[in-house]
Every structure is written in structure tokens, then in C-alpha cells.
Image 1: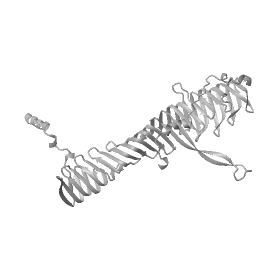
Image 2: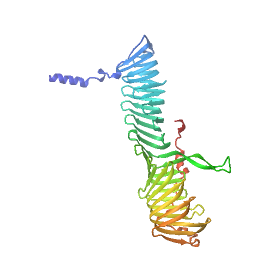
Image 3: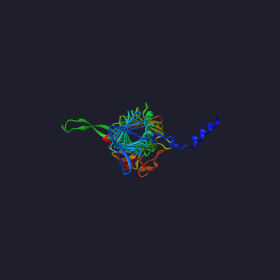
Image 4: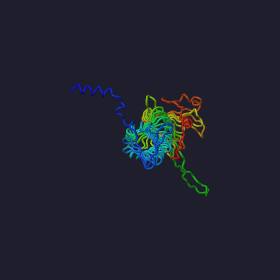
Length: 478
């Protein structure tokens, strides 16, 4: 018995592979209403007409006409071509089937449907043994939640993975993503995008650009970590006085302007779960109207209409508004729609305002905490808590008239037309007056501890310079 088993083993080990042919080497069979045999240039072919059926294993193809190349084990397919393999169906008007490769291809337009996705293109090929499609030119992939378009796409059915290249766009209920190339995993709902990436959020009218994106739809999380840049366009309503039709009567009309939010940083993350917040990290620059900021961490809590910037790696966030500069370990911005309602500056807080007519003169105020309130997009009131100090320049009909230096436990400043109108000191106030002859040309000697005038304020030109060379997209056509 042992000798017999040993002999069987030896025979199996040394037997040539082609004695046990793989399914892809099985000859294709073609039947139809009529058949014509030919020999062209020494090659035997069969032309089959009417109700043609081609079969190889579990692949079944029907068409109006087929030309079978017997030696090559291939067939040309013409008219109403339908290829099936289990739950997969491919439709085209003309194609070719390669029996040894178990591959079907078409260059006149084709559609693939496997009950999970529908894939169309001008040209493409499908490998039945690999469950792999390679489609090119005007490619579209549809599923229940998204549409992906590109000029080249490789789709692995078992993995439910799509690799798209050239003018890629993927659209779902919330976002539109553009990229030079993209990997999309349908089952996990994960997307990776590369180079010239742009994502548009349909709900908040924001657009984020970059060169590498990761999107995890099931976690409601998106990250761009190469050259991220955000633009969000808001509509701002403004009331203006109108006397067009009756000069003696004052009326008001409401107009709207487009007010864009621009953000640049090293990393941007969007958390779209119940908290719904956005995070920009490292070398953050922000610009919106008269408001600008530089910091290393910005958190935008959308549901709370609140923006928080924090001190990271000993670098304080700095915020500019009109001619004022604010610094502190943490700055919280409270919004009313798209306008700033009030600000909280916590720990080592400092407020600096440069006079537009006399740029060498800076009003200064410091405290452990500062609260600033806005009215009609202008500073209306500032409050200073714990160890309040201030230096304010005085003017008499716009002519310099010395300065006042004061300290107290707390203080409040009332503004009128963006200028200091009244200063109130509370708790052991001390105030000193310096006449103009002591102040003129000596402004630099009148500074509070922590004074620092930061001049690299972000501008629209500096931020958009990054944006100039990026690929442009037709957003209005989406």
C-alpha cells in the first residue's frame, strides 16, 4: 500500500501543469443560428450569426454576431453584447473576448452592473478571474450614496476599491471632492485624494484645497495635511440710509455683500459628528474682512458659533481687528451669524491700537483677562479684569495732547466711532498724566510690560498668492 501511495505522489509531483488546464485555458464555445468556417492567412476562424452565445466556465456572453479565432481562443463580439458572470453584467455594442486571459474589452462605450455599483465609460476591459475592471475616458461609477467620475478608473470588485486618475470628482449628499487621483473604498466609505485636491461642502458653502486628503465618511471625519487652504463665502446684510426718492425723508434699505473667510495652515480637520467642529493646526493664518489672526491652533465650533485659538509651543495667538492688535494665551471669538459679537482674551492679555493719523502712537491695555464687545462690526466696549494697566494718548480736536497712564484692579473703555470715548477704572485706581512736550518723539519710552507690535498681519494678497497657481474648478457647474 505504501508503494502505491509513493508512486501516486511521484506522478503528481512530476506531471506537467498543462495536463490539468486552468479554467482560463479552457476553449471557448460559440453557438448561434448559423456558422461559417474560414481560413484567413492560415488561421482558422468561425463566423457565427444570430442569437450567438459564447460560453467559458461561468462566463456567458450573448450578441448578434461573433467571429471566433480558434487557435488564439479569442472572439470578436458585435451587436447587443451582454456578458454575464454570476451577479455581474457588462453591456456594449461591440467588444472582444480573450479566452486565455478571461478578459472582455470594448472601445465603443460599455456599462458594468453588479447590483452594488454601475460603471460606465467610453473604453474599458474586465478581467473575470481577477474581478477587476480598468475603464478609461468619461468614466462614471454610481452607487447608492455617491457618484465618481474620472478619465481612468481601476475597480476591484471583491475589495470594493476604486483607483481613479485624471480629472477625478466624487460627489455625495454633503461634499464634492476633486483631485488628480483618488482611492475610494466603498464598503468602509474611506477616500484618499492626491494632488490638486479640492473639497466643497454643499451646506456651509466652504471650499478646502490641498494636495492630500483623507475622508472617513462613517466617522464623519476629514483631514487635509498637505498645503490646506480654506475659503468660505458668507452673505453679509448691511443697512444703509436711502434718500433717493425723497431727500427730505430718511429711509433705510438692506443690501448684501460677499464676505469671504480665508484660512491657511499645515493641517485642517473637520469633525462633522454631533459636535460639528473644524480644527486648523500649525502656522494658522486667518482673514475675514477687517479681522485677521495668526496662531498655531484654531478650533471652530460650528454649532456654538464660536472660534477658539490657543497658545501652542510658547507662541501666543495674535488677532487683528481694524487698527487693533490683541494677544493672549487663549482667544475665544463669539459669532452672530458671520459677524463677531464679542471676544474673550484669557491670561497675559494685551490690547494694542495704532492711531491712523499718528502711527507712532499706540494705545495699550493689559490685564489677566479682557472682554471686548462689538456693535455693528465695530468695537463698542472693552472690559479688563485683574491687574489692569493702560496707556492712552489724548487729543484735542485731533491734535496730540499728551497721554494718560493708569493701573487698577479692573477697567472699562467705551468707544465711539472706533475711538476711545471714556475710560473707567475700578479698584485702587492710579493715574498719571504726561504732557505733550514730554511725549512727542518719545513714544517708544511709553510702553507696558508685554508690549509687542507684530507687523506680519495676513492680507488677502498674501493668502491668495498660495492660491494663484492652483488648478481652478467650475463650482457653478456642480
